[in-house]
Length: 145
Image (cartoon, rainbow, N blue to C red; front, side, top):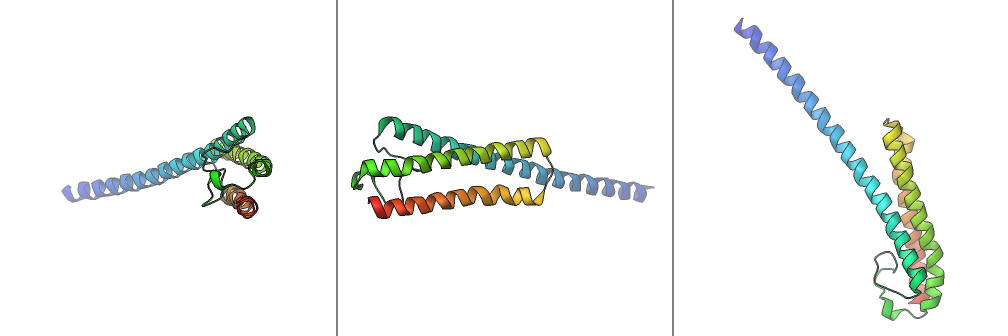
């Protein structure tokens, strides 16, 4: 009788541990979805904030999205030309990232399923937008610095 109870106890413990492991993976997937959503919406809002502030002040200010790498605002050769060049592109970046964040939020909250092409697009489209913006900044660094 003792052996039979031991076998049942081991089986129950193994099933519980397997369920806990699956729950942990699901929780981690949910947490990664929330982090991705925050990153997409946050970068979109920050880009739109940068656009609005740049449009209102018409002056350069310290910002991580605004300047190409290793370029400082005080060494800009043509400030007005740079502002005219970067403003519409910054607006496109902000709106696109915000739309990606909203679309991903709706997808993850409403469908809750996993469609492989949507999961791939969730990563590829925002990455492509950021690569495009890096190319824009590289052109700006050659022309305005």
